[in-house]
Image 1 (cartoon, rainbow, N blue to C red):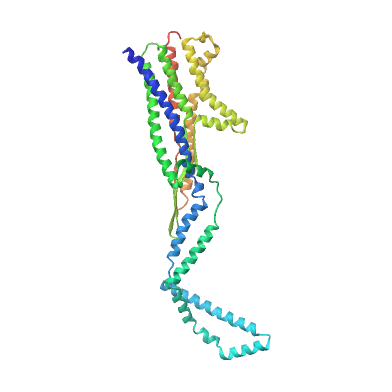
Image 2 (image 1 turned 30 degrees about the horizontal axis):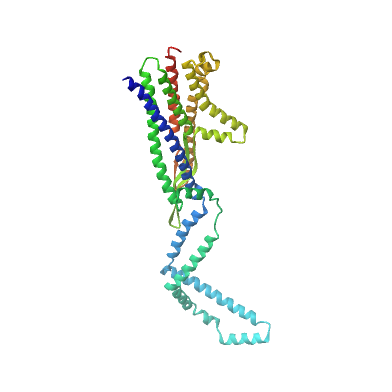
Length: 418
C-alpha cells in the first residue's frame, strides 16, 4: 500500500508532463492549420474576388449563349426589325447616291438614268422576301454555331481584360505547405487535419485535467498533513496546468458567411464558407502582440497581462514551496509572506478567467448581432451566417489551474510546520 501511495502520484506526474508536451505541440500545430484554413476561406478569395466572380459568371454566360435559339414568335419580331432596318438602309443608300450625283453634269445624267430605270418603291416591295431569306440563313445550324462562337470569343476577350491584382504569397505558401494543387484540395486536407487534431487535443486536455483532479483529490481525502513529496507533486501539477493553459489558444474568434445564394439570369450564384474574421490566440500570443505594438499604453497592458496571468502565479507557487520547507527561514521573509498571505488578491488569476469568459460572451454577442443584420438582406438573397467564437482547451486548463491553486493554499495550512 505504501508503494502504491508512493508510485501513483509519480506516475500521474509523468503522464501529466507527457500530456502537457503533447497538448502544447498539437495545439500550436492546429492553431497554424486553423489560421491557414481561415485564410483559404477568406472572403477576399471568394465574394470579394474578381476571379471567383469571373469563374461563376463565365459558366452562366456560356450556358446562356449555348441556348440561343430563334423561336416562331422571335422570328416574327425579328422579321419586323429586319424589314425596318432594310427599309431605312435603302433610304440611306438612295440619299447617298443622290448626294454623290449632285453638283456635276455626269452625276446628273447618272441620276436621271436611275430615276428612269430603277424604282426604289419596287425594290422595297421585296423587303419581306429579303427579311425571310436573312432569317432562314440565320437559323441554319452552321450560322448559329458561328454566331455562338463569335459571342464566346468576345466574352473570353472581355474576361481576359477583367482582372484584379492580389497578393497571393500567403496563399502560395499554404498550397506549398499542404502539397495541394489548388485551394479546394488544400481546404479538404486542412479540414481533416483540424478535425482530427481537435478531437485529439480535447481528449488529451480532459485527461490532463482528470489526472490533476485525481492528484489533488488523493491528497484532499487524506486529512493528515501532506508529505513533502506529495506537496511537490501538487506544485508540479499546477505548473504543468499553468504552462499548458497560457501557451495554448484560449479562444477562437470567427465570423463567416456559411452560405450565400442568389439568382442571376436564372442561374444560382453560390458562395460558401466566406470567412470575414478569424483569430486564435493564447495569453502569450496576446502578450507578444501587445508588447510589439508601437503605443506605450498597449505595451503596458501586455506587461500587466503577463504579470497577472504568469509571473504572479509562478511566484506564488514557488513561494509556497519555500514557505512549506521554511528554506533559509522563508517564513520570516517579507516577500515570501507577501506572496503566500497577501498575493492571492493581487495575482488575479480568477479575474483573468472571468475576464476571458466575459470577453467570449461579449465577442459572441457582438458578432452574432452583426451577422443577423447581414442574414436579413432580402427575399431574393439567401445568406446563412455562422458565429464560430468558441472557448478553447487552453481556457479550461487555466480555469482548472485557478481552482486547484486554491486547494493548494488550503493544503499548505494543514502542514504542522506552517
